[in-house]
Every structure is written in structure tokens, then in C-alpha cells.
Length: 203
Image 1 (cartoon, helix red, strand yellow):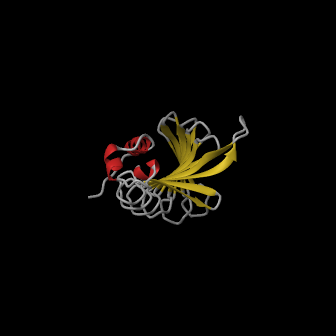
Image 2 (cartoon, one colour; image 1 turned 90 degrees about the vertical axis):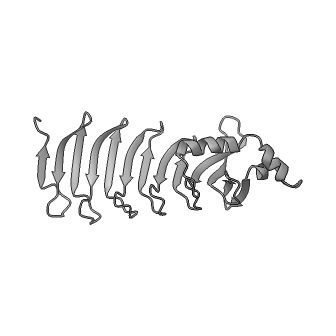
Image 3 (cartoon, helix red, strand yellow; image 1 turned 60 degrees about the vertical axis):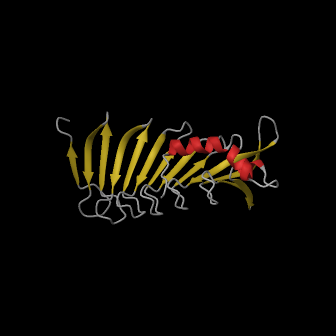
């Protein structure tokens, strides 16, 4: 049976994986296993990146992948590892469902989600340096092709663009004010220009 982990539950599991080794795992492990191997943690080098994998369920396959690069700490001048990307398998099917990218300060700048576990990205979220979403791309047809784009200012939705005809081009624009749609622009002939405006009632 596949297990599906919510992001917070997975994060908690990952935190536990970084603590001490479990007593049961220690009893089964051979004398040559390191503490990290007992916890299901393995590390290897791929070019300039260090890849650390976590087997949270001790099933012999990774559930979390962390990619980091070596840099110099500007405060101490010493070499440090900086997390670049993290990938997670939430439903234990061996495929990545969540991808996160980080800046040099350790803040998430982009996150991609496979919401229906079919191997295709259904939502991409972009963040500012404070971790507040600035843009979202959604593939509402679950085919891996975005057809809705949401734009935010200070965490509030200000504009939504849609490809309602599946042409790959935006044909509907929604402008939001105070949490409500203020006006909608529609491209009726497919030239990328608004041909019709619909105003909110009373505006």
C-alpha cells in the first residue's frame, strides 16, 4: 500500500531522520554501517553538487534528495555546503512529486508540485526573498502544460491570466482589487489583444 505524506509530515520525518539513529535499526545494522547509513542516509558526488538521499521508511530506496554546492561563508571565510535543490517523493512510488529550489541564503525561490502523482508538474510557485509567493503557474488540465497564471503583489492576487482554448496563448485577463475581480479582458480573435472588457457590477 502506498503511503501519502503531507509536506509537513514529510518535513517532520526528515527532521527525525537527522537526529539519532533508531534503536531497532541499530540492532539490525552490521558493524560496518555508519550512523547515517543506519538512518537510511547516503551521500555521493555528482559533478559540482553533493547529493544526499534519505530513505525515511528504510525500504531500500530514497524518498528525499538534497542537492548542495560548496561555497565560502562570507562571515567566516570557511567552506560551507549550500542547499541548491530538494526533491521529495510524497506517496512512496519512487517518483519525485515536489521540487524546491533555494537561493544562497537558504530561502525557497521556486517550488514545483505534481498534485496527482502522474509524473507531470501541475503547479509552479515562485517566491520573493521573504518567502512570499509572487507568481503561480497551474496546469488545470493535469497535462503538464500551464493554462492559468496568477500574479501577486505583497502576497495578494492582483492578476490572473488564462488560456481557455488550449492554444498556449493567454486569451483572458482578470484584474483583482481588494480580493475581488475588478475587470476581465477577453481576446476573442486570438491575436493576443483584449477585444472585450467586462467590468465588475457597480464599478
